[in-house]
Image (cartoon, rainbow, N blue to C red):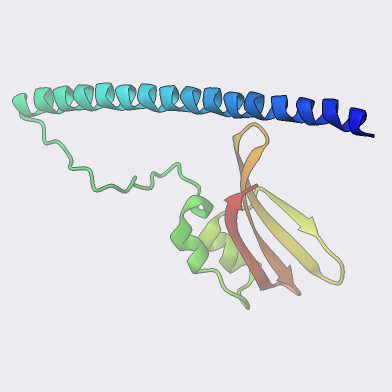
Length: 148
């Protein structure tokens, strides 16, 4: 029995440093990626500063950044978080679509139930999705968008 445990223990002891070494390599790679992103941000910041300086020198007013991206006319209403705050139980389907816009899809349920699905693929296999559940034409539940 002791002979069997010896090689097994030795193999386990050797595997720990390999895993730790792999973690160290992964951590270094992540550090390098962070450094590269910082360089890119610095480069973009310099370019923006140059462009704003050029605009000012030609008399063009430069808008100040507030930290919030403005909603554009092309932004679907369901992607604006404040709109989801306005949807509440008891609303009709028309009221919901008036606030969130047309759903990505609808799913019928049993006994007059219906689910309005709002989804956007943000990366292959990763979706931002929310839904509004209706029972007898009225909102019964709201699930705000989250990544899935």
